[in-house]
Image 1 (cartoon, helix red, strand yellow):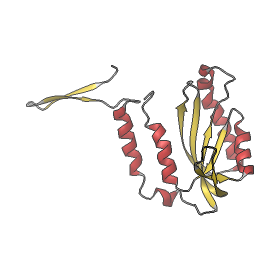
Image 2 (cartoon, rainbow, N blue to C red; image 1 turned 30 degrees about the horizontal axis):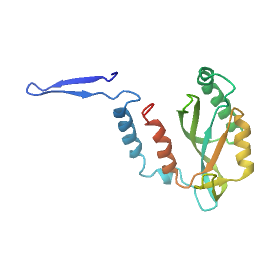
Image 3 (cartoon, rainbow, N blue to C red; image 1 turned 90 degrees about the vertical axis):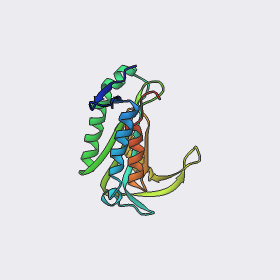
Image 4 (cartoon, rainbow, N blue to C red; image 1 turned 45 degrees about the vertical axis):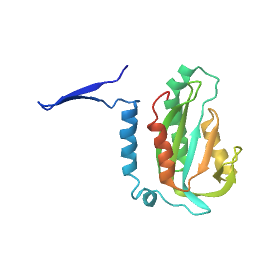
Amino acid sequence: SNDIYVHFSDGVKEWNMRSSKRGNDVYARNLYKKFLVYREGFNKLFGGFSNEFTSSLMVTLTIRRDCSVADAWISIGKWFNVYLNKLKRKYKDFKMFRVWEVHRDYFPHIHILFVFKEHFHIRKGRLRNGKQAWLVDDDVNKWFSDKWGRGWVTVRGVANPFDAFQYIAKYSTKVAFE
């Protein structure tokens, strides 16, 4: 086991405690607790939602399988920075939370919660799997997709920014290869 234990003694009693280590369940639990602290006031700060418009978008970027897994991991940071620079040319000021995730075939993909000053038209729709989602207009979806150019892009409107933030946090706190 790669677990790290800290030994404590108060002179009367001794005990070992498993340490928080990036990727283990202790780390995941501690990180998730930190995310929950932000719930208070989060939607007010990052709000901007109505039944027709939102300032928050959830974007997922995937990688085509035309390179090796190693090359994908080596290059994804650079590709993502190029993507952000393209976004900054159009949307001057935005905030984001992002997290990398691993597919079953070990290729990376990125989940991003963007919060813009601009508002995007949204509508309720159904995905292929039957789930309801807030969909953005086709031209917005196409614009975000064209700027990536490295694989599939999913763009969804966000009705509740904190719920989207928790979705991102789930990937940050996920223990590798559960």
